[in-house]
Length: 421
Image 1 (cartoon, rainbow, N blue to C red):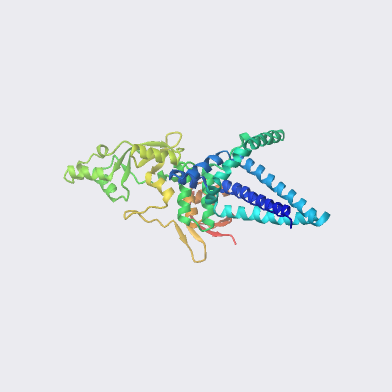
Image 2 (cartoon, rainbow, N blue to C red):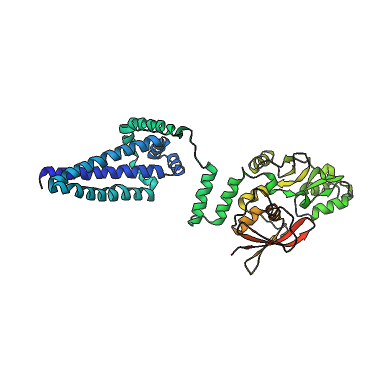
């Protein structure tokens, strides 16, 4: 081989290496985790800050890398064609096409991009100075090309400047956790906790409250001994107090305040004035989001609120624990009453109390029943059937077979659910 041929081969090799850098940099910079970069930058990694600034204008960076990559690829292919023409005549065009396609696909596409995808942060940090140099050289051309592309697309009704991310930050994080769960990187309990936290801004207090029909409360007009006995027998620390009607909540008694009051009167319950022990009730609209209600609980240092509808009628009550349970799952202590709401049967079916919330059932069994139109599993059946079913009636929807086992007046109290084969 002549010296000129060897030089040409060396230049082609160098250009393929440059193409390797361009392709790998593009993949590494687009695949890098912003969260990981922020952590590295906070710990003092200067290259992480450089990468963050570069991907801050991602269109300019990618455009510059594409210009450089195409430039070296075309130049390498032109030199290879010239070299093979001098060696093999007209057949050299064919040989050059085959050889350069193989070299560029393997060493300038698959190899660098696979490497960059496997270790995006490490690769991005390594090529950060190179990427900065490329932007300095081709940044102006990239900006001009991007402007031309925007004008061209605008002719066809596509306005890139007004496009926003299709997924919100919450949806993107939820999707990431779901993917990691499917791949085995996140266990179900952790996925549910993250999902519960992300759902707080979407759910309302009416979705998690204890309905007024299930509220434990005391009548302010009852004898003090009866009221004290009811409160001390209750498994709950805070008990609403009503007068004249169960929907007329006039106070909330804390068991610890009651015990202090009993101590002051030598444990003589007949001397207790329950309204002096009770604190003023806090009423909140049923449309308040759990995120806002959680912040309000923390701000007021409160643990219980009475939920009312748009007409001011009492719908139920919500506690700080109810909201926390949406994040961490069911919290039970030594005073909680165990309610058997969900029971797995040997035949694969599930017997469910009608009052069980759909969200709790989905979380417990990893189902995906919709909870937009109804809160409880009985409410879901009534909504889907548009009627109040009779006992032993069966329905199929959402991939499940629902059989009404028990009905009390207009309430479905027990259901059997089995997956459709």
